[in-house]
Figure (tube, helix red, strand yellow):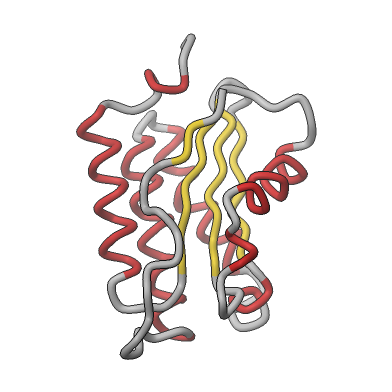
Length: 146
């Protein structure tokens, strides 16, 4: 796989963006997906850099979630900001990652991402329900690295 853009078809990308839109519809929380070819540092450290670069750490209620993938490295990380991390069960991100990994192992990256987004959205809705005046603070588009 030479380019990140070859990882998902346009239709799969649109399905993921739609999953983000639907997941965020009933919450003030924010979900971002970032896909890049590889990282020269630890995947978690890189995810934290991307978390900051995409301004996920600047949401009003600290309830942003990042799903980070380094395609060539076959590595991915799910991380939430302090607001959501303080409320979800301790194993929540690990169990979400397990659901995603089961799809990834079969080569179904779109469904793995959609399921991860959906699970994150359910928790965000539970702890941060949509209220009048809530705005979509971050883009729903997939962020692509090199």
